[in-house]
Amino acid sequence: MPQRLNWLDWTALVLAIIGALNWGLVGFFNFDLIRLIFGTGSSPTAVVSTLSRIIFAIVGLGGLYSIYTLVKIGRMQARMMPAEERERMRRAA
Image (tube, rainbow, N blue to C red):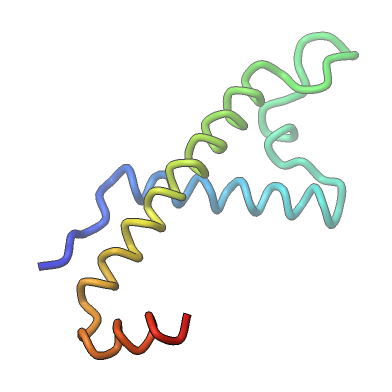
C-alpha cells in the first residue's frame, strides 16, 4: 500500500507555494506581500522586520522539507509503476 502524505508534507508544500508566489510577486512587480502584511520593522531604516524574517525562515524550511517530500513521492510512484515500465525507463536513461 502506498504511503500517504502527512500533515508536515502538506504544510511544507503550502509554505513552498506561498514562498514561490511571494517571490513571483517580488520578481514581476517588485511587490513583497510578506513585508506588506508584517511590516518593515520599528525603525524607518529597517529593511525587513523580525516577524517578516521569521516568516521567510519558516517558508525556507518548508521549501527544504519539500525536497524530501518530492523524493518520497517519487519513491511512491516507483513502487506503483509496473516492473516492465521501470526497466524501460532505466534503459532509456
